[in-house]
Length: 389
Image (cartoon, rainbow, N blue to C red; front, side, top):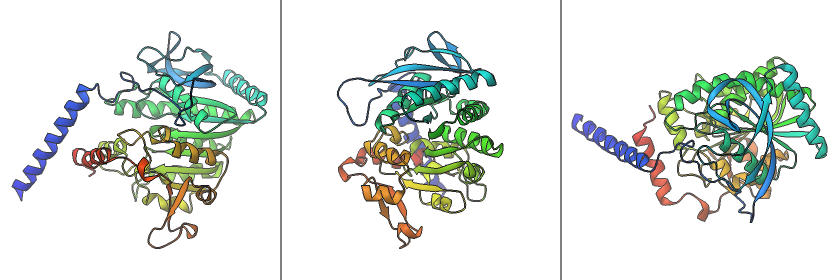
């Protein structure tokens, strides 16, 4: 028995060393060092420019923002071109001003309101990025999401101070907590300006968003319309369920929350090990079915087969299937309507149809579009290297 255990440990160590050498050789997964091109999932020909508002607590740099926390909120507007790549030290040129006071933040919210009125609408799409993201990549991804979901009103990127490095997860978690008060202020100001707010939040960004929305709700100072939480990096432990508590706290103040989860999300597998084996809400599609009742208006989508990056964490920006479904979510379509449209399918669970609450909605992905065998192999090996306790 002990020899078998030692053999398994050696096997795990060998895999970890091989993967470590591979990551070191290719520069790792750090967005700040090796950013990836950002393009539309619809593969449009030619470049598309989009105007984008931003609010960030990052430290200001020449013409942009750096990787460190700035201890104050700054806001602005920039024109972003898709496709593009945020090379190290480069990115969309921006100018910004302090919006760290109530008066300045109110003025900024009024700028967004004026922009929406010029577009003949009164809505703003707020995008909150996740772990391992620079300011420039956050801007590009927010612009891409607006483009791919055919969003025709104002967009706002909330850029908290992620360091953009895959090996700085603990630092990112700490900085994400600093961002919650700033996001509360942004949400309150947008509500006070009479804007309807829709949110797309990814990974650690979902943690920030739920915390801010709940605090705003408790203070009775606004609400959110559609809230999309993709790959939420939040504890979903059975008897100590942070995600469920945050949902309940915010539920009186959102019209509907849509949770996308993938059981093959390698980043969240790593996060689970980092957090002592505690499940993450963005990786437990079946367990998330418990949020169907008693947690407000919540829709649950299993996105395990979504095409995306090899780590399976950024599928929400990497597949036209996700873009299409999020487009319908933002338009207010129910899961049943999206199933009829073909963006979702209904998979029975324990013999019950989706209509009775016992089944689950699954992102509709053609077989040839599902992750290939090599990607599946990597995702199956990853839990061996980073075991969930």
